[in-house]
Length: 402
Image (tube, rainbow, N blue to C red; front, side, top):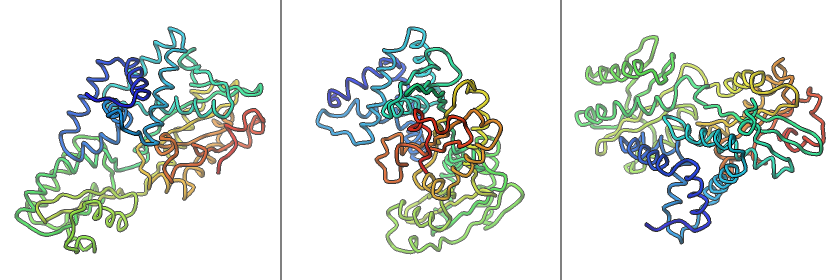
């Protein structure tokens, strides 16, 4: 099989050696099998395991292939992992490889480790000496930063945006996937274009019983030719699809319809489309209240500070907001939701030992090449009340970026 360009291939091969070639191959096979169950599940898994899938694709790429800027960033972080593996003590290397092995199991991903590696790389480029204290010394924090005689402890943590949503995207994918055949069968007997709106006051998560119950209610509504059903758990309404994009004879692009639905229902809506020939059902779901991703961030910060920081040095909490898309990330920033909740946290007693909080997403992880990525690789909020807030040596890591 043809392979990627030599430098990238060498780096990826060395990284896979840290994970274990057999374990890596098994993980790739598992992702491929799971993704084959349906297109929706496949798309969700491709997003969830984007790092692993990208590295595997580059490993198999032809020598003439030119990696994209985002792919180059991932290879660079894989190189950082290899260099770290070689630099750690035997005990530290054992802990590091245990983290990599855990990332290859169940629902885990490489995102937390790559967030850690990228954060360390970012701070080194700012002139800090960086020690992986968590891996090397089993410290409660992850990194120890030093610059011009000043020190700071840094904790890397990943928060899923699902923690701030009443309707989880993963559960939505499973819900729609489970009724897809029923919708197609119904469309065979009811050709046309429809919109099924779901309002879910009690939310929707990974609870299998709730999923099955909601799927059953949708099937019952379709079978009874009813157009509306509601109780305290959900409101279902089936109407003709009146969006302009659906009235055009050309509906070959599902993305076109989804874009119209997004404009109609907003960035927090959960959307899907099922088709049968030229017939279709568009589905749009909303929770009973607005998402509270930034509120979930504030709660996580309050839990992390007293448990992960020693309190003997200024502390930095470096948060990675996972499971967001570009639109949501931009919304959280433009409406100052992350800034507002973070600055509220910085007034709490738990934040007395925190000199700064940073936030990043996949857009920043991939080198900030996307136009919606935060400048300087992260959003950064300084705690002006901390005694070290104006220490010159810490300035590159703590000065507010917004």
